[in-house]
Length: 298
Ligand code: GUN
Image (cartoon, rainbow, N blue to C red; front, side, top):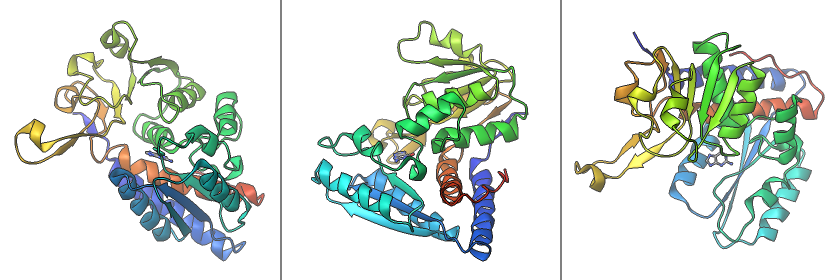
């Protein structure tokens, strides 16, 4: 029987554990962690993410600070806001929602965030620490995938992992995390020769390409664990049914009977991202004050 990896339930448990850690920080040293989220423009998907972050941050007992800027904001305006948040002691985590409008150099803004408050883990200092085994803040989506793998697979050492996708947000940090778990780790991408054959080697297959159902059932090694990071909306017009639908990067119906365990879309990796963001905010709040970081509950 294939295990369906229920990220929604796992993320709810993680948020509850983070909530307990926050309660202990408030009751003990009197620290209420605070997360600032910056949204530039009105991208509909980003607005949904930001709303969910705000609600879940408050539910975990933390302070949530939202900053909305118009789509035509200059890079300097954004840099000034980041400088203000860096200097604000009530702010432990800063997240600038991506994508940013074209007039803004996203990496310049991300690198202006104090690395100690970089709860997205996108600052070059945190990327470097992750690559060299230091105390990084780790990007939330790959961290969520790792927590699911540790829970549903157990020991990862020696397993062959293939990551399809080489983004700075998912593919590259995911590879660093799996390497640190002693996986034999391959990053495959759009120029990989015989991608299907690479995927068939994988005990752990991570799909993070953003192409709907690109990874087919016969690319899966029997007994593999499949983590699907893709969230692709198939428009109602393309389906001819009047309803749009979310699908992953993996052809789920084909892959599920072959895999030992697989994440669904929606309800797999997606809910883990915000839960890990909350966990990173607690980590940042503790490290900034030289308090012990609570042991990972999950
Ligand atoms: N846009 C989509 N996912 C993310 C994320 O994890 N962090 C940020 N900052 N923006 C995003």
